[in-house]
Length: 387
Picture 1 (cartoon, helix red, strand yellow):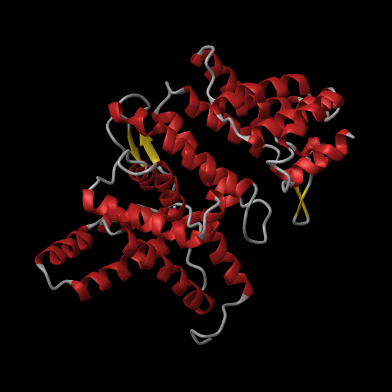
Picture 2 (picture 1 turned 180 degrees about the horizontal axis):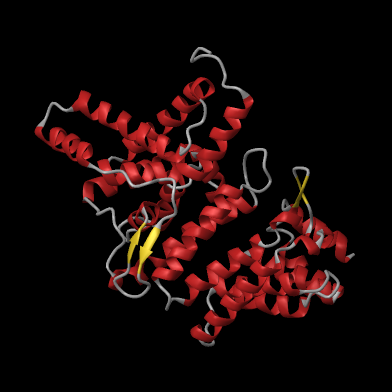
């Protein structure tokens, strides 16, 4: 097979799956080792391309993640060697040669769980670096989704409802700001964590959302993204056990993810009312509900948006059937969420929930949203259902 020929379907599928699982790990490792964000992404991309050309003949290696990381690192060394005309580049190259790669095939470890915790995970370091307060909020989220999750600029632009060109410039400016400011690639000290937490949680929420309702690709659910978001949310919750919103986000993810097996059938999404609830993962629902109960007690009366959304998800996940869903309680929870997120989509969801319990009330709440959400398919479906 020549480099120009496409790889066999089996190898393509393997590499595509590994991209979702290993991209963030490879890029984060190279950023730590080189300090060069663009170099890290380019060499990671080269490594995946080389896998497509090498593995059909050589076979998939026993530890493909380690192979990809080592290949990307070697490509970075080659590029730095060709560019090492100055003393700074020579020092950078020497440091990279001296780096001992971690085993990228095993799980990330951590030590401790309270203040001063050291988290041995390059991807978590990457999130906290991207979420430095010097960067605008949207730039923090977009940069992390690009470098950590491997989302394309077009996918991120869709999530932010801006053009691809605008998003490309935003990501480029964020990288330049990190480089020019010399921001450290590390989890910040304990006293700085709360300041960065909203942006970190925002990154994880969008990462999970992109996987849970994929905006691109052939899969309605991108398991690699949802699994990575949950894994990182567990790390953040372990790092900040006293932050109830971190626990609330993890509970929200667990409760939604527990329904994933029943949400998809033959590549098509299955509506909630048609899902086979026997396929929901009860053990994961129990974990999410227990975690939610804990953080609600911990956070007192002022629940934040992630805890409120988790409470809504818990109402759905614990209802014996669609008909027995506590719609009045869900409508009240959306009312509480609206105080944190005053958007028309939240108002629409509140109206839909209210309409499930009282159709006339639901229609009355939907009507004021008509002009602003006239093109939204959920609005028209809700009107039809309540009519």
